[in-house]
Figure 1 (cartoon, rainbow, N blue to C red):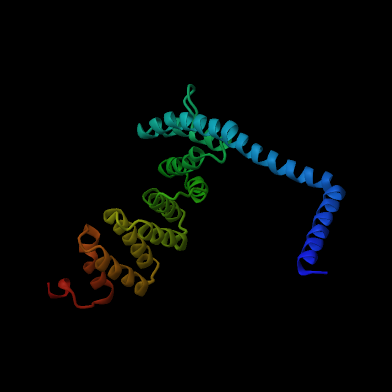
Figure 2: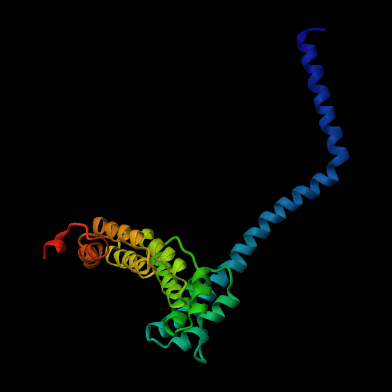
Length: 230
């Protein structure tokens, strides 16, 4: 048999095998294909008919709660004011939406400002965003809540995170780094506190906290600096 005939025979065998396979398993294959098609259609339907409207509804609901927050009507911002919903309702009823995630930040901030530090931690811990400026403030607020609960190690951790997350905002980043140093100092961790103050001085020299860093370094270590000659 020539090479050409051999190839034709092999091709025919392959086609026969495919045809046989299809006849034997066509029912199962059609089910699988159907699942794939319906799954894709289901995803499209879910995204456009469920997720989209839910996001819109959540965005409408959070707008009024944000207004109440801006007016320092914190109770109304959290629980609603009779005509509009509050952050807690949005969290509980619009889970998975961007507005529900943002509502966790606002709820945590409300609880922090009203002195309910445990609930502040609960909601701030559960919030996250890719917007670094907002994440920095959330970490800072979480650190403040831990500080009020006398959970100093956690407070220090999140003050440092806040300072590192968006250090382009030098006034706020330097403030959070300073708070981390102060917490370390009050905890008796002098060397770590000095290291933080040095970092503050080197990284944010043009900020108020950066300019004050030498004072704290000298007080704790007596290392030569501008205050040692005064």
